[in-house]
Structure formats: C-alpha cells, structure tokens
Length: 352
Figure 1 (cartoon, rainbow, N blue to C red):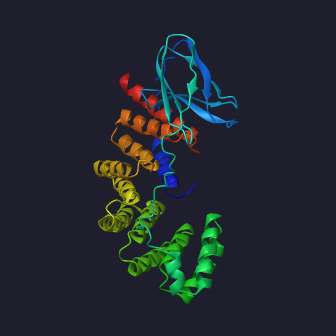
Figure 2: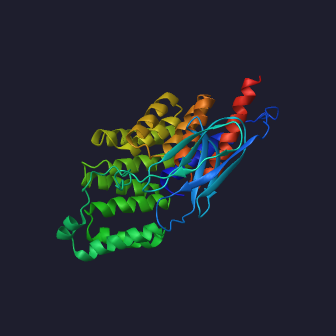
C-alpha cells in the first residue's frame, strides 16, 4: 500500500482498535423475510464481464455486495422489510440506483444505459504541480538526452519499488545536473522511502528553490514531516509537536502557492489531527474532499477525527461513504470490521 492510503489506514487502525467494545451490546437480529434477485442487462454484444452489484440503504449505508455472473444474474438474501437501493456502476454506462421496497421476495431486472458523453475523466492530480511545469520536451532542449532517458528509467524503477537502483541513477544524474528540478524532487521521494529523512528534506528544499512557483516540493516536505513525526512518537510529545509544526509551515506555504492543492489540505487535516486540533482537522479534510471528491483516503482520516470527537454517527457515515465509493478497495474487509466495532460502541452508549 502506498502514499496517502497507507497513512490514512495507519491512522484509522491505530485509533479504532483501541476502542473498548461492550460485550453486552449485541445487535438484535431480525427474522429473514425476503430476497432480491434479477438480471443486469448490458446492451453490448458478447458482454460477459463479471462485475459487482451493491445493495444499500439510505443511499449510502452498504447492506450486501455480490458479483453478477457472466449472464448478469445477481441475488441478495436474508433481507428484512424496508427500502433498499440496488447500485450498479460500470465504465461507459450511467450509474444505477434502483429503489426497491421490500415486502417479500422481489425480482428486479436492470437495463444499463450508455453515458450520454463518453468522456474519460483524467485522474485527479495530487502532486501540487501546475500543468505543464515539467515538460520533457523542454528539458531535452536544456539537458543532454542521456540524462532525460536516465530519468525516465528511474521512474520505472520506482514503480517496481527498486529504490536502491533508482537512488544510484539519481545520484549520477544530480552529479551531472544539480539544477535538474525533477531529479531533485524524485530523489527526495526515494530518500523518504528509504527513511533517510534529512537527505529527503535537503532534496525537497533544493527542489523548492529551483522551482519557487511550484507547491509540489512543499507538499512533499509536509508529507515527510508527518511521517517523521509518526516515527518519533516514542521521543515524546515535545519532539513530535516540533516536527508537526514544520509540516504545518510547509503545507501552509503550499496552499498559498496553489489554493486548490487538495492533497495539501488533506495533509493539513492529518497534521491537525495528530496535533489534537480536531475542529481544524475536520475543516481541512472537508475542504480537501470539496476540491477532490475522489481523494477517498480523506474520508478515513475524517472518520478518525469524528472518532476523537465522539461523533459516532459521523464516523459511520464517512466509513459508509468510503465503502460505497470504493466497492473494490483492497482494505474493504478491514474497514467493514472497523465499522462494526464503531456500531457496537455506539449502541453500547445508547444502552447505558
């Protein structure tokens, strides 16, 4: 697991597993009364892909998830009376939220409709760079082609987590071209992956000096300080608070340069959370989601904030929204388990 996802899950697991769960708080089971089954019809010749179908309540709260077979058939069982929504999301088709009022066994067939405009949305850029800041063609006019090719090879090594090899190549590139901004920033990332915090800090600051209009190195610095603070928790709150103040300074400078830097606001939220300023953390994490609704890990961080504020219903809302937006999340089972613990805690409080 990489980057912000790892940070958010670490935060969530570190907090939620400390919650004492009352053995007396048991969820009351209701009698099984109904099933929902049917077919999802995809109007494409020879379409046989397997895909997920969700069942939710209140448009957000997950109830069940199943996988439709190659014929589009699905089935939900063990349902009580109530209003549910069958949710289907397929690339190239309009999202479906089919309401079903369950009073007995139900058959619900769904015909998918093509999206009116078949446009591919580019992934949100969390780097803090302005578009076009790093132009390979421009670099090729300024630096020898061998350096640019070496930099491309480094990026491939990083993708397969071969950081030792990437570091050797980057050190050679920087020896020949110490003012090559992308190399300085990337070697900072590699140093950070290797836990060499002071080397990473120096590289990021050099990158910031080389490109003073870019927020990216400052965001990298903020991420570095947060990670370093977490690694130094055993040294006491004074040490941790000093490092977190460095993170705040870097990230605040980043949002001055780029007010729509969603990842900077996410990191600010995490920093305020770790500093026990929960209302400030809430504000910054919400702003990050306003800027980038697909910055899903901000919802996990926001769940942590509400946990500290003892706002159990808001914790559940954020976890449910994360699960709804990430039906194939690699941490889905962990988040579901955490949600169950929060629900139990909430119900224990109601019975006191």
